[in-house]
Image (cartoon, rainbow, N blue to C red; front, side, top):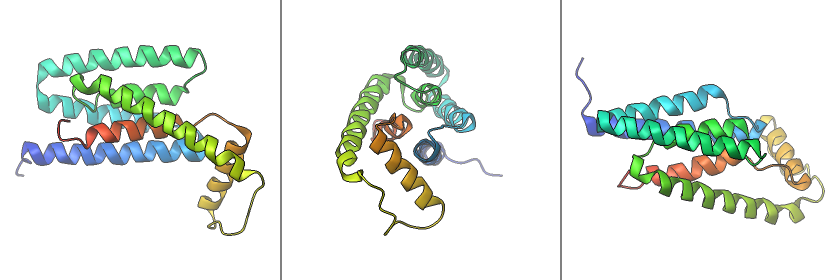
Length: 175
């Protein structure tokens, strides 16, 4: 078996990371849950990406991910984040080079602000359920459930912001 060239392997890991982040975001929208296995796989992909950069970078990345976890856990204690968000954010910190973690956190915060504005903008438009025009099956149920959450001012699916902010950093050439 011929080993993959490092650039193809790095690209494959980025694509896998983006797919996992999409799965986390969709799960958070649908159920307001981010499964532990998705956060664990994101962390594993991040560790593999860091391993391609060398051993010294891996130690710094683990330290930063630990600090992100502690900071996010403090937000969880105050009710600002869910437990799945804490785990996903720490795992996502492993996906980017250590020097880009502050930029990633800023991108996540900005994506969270945009998500909040989007939800606030939708709230007046979703006063009453409108069953017509919605797709059938699971998607319909998910959309109706999300519309009900938005109308009630339920917590945001912050996994969406984590996924979007991290994706923006991952697709940049510097990452």
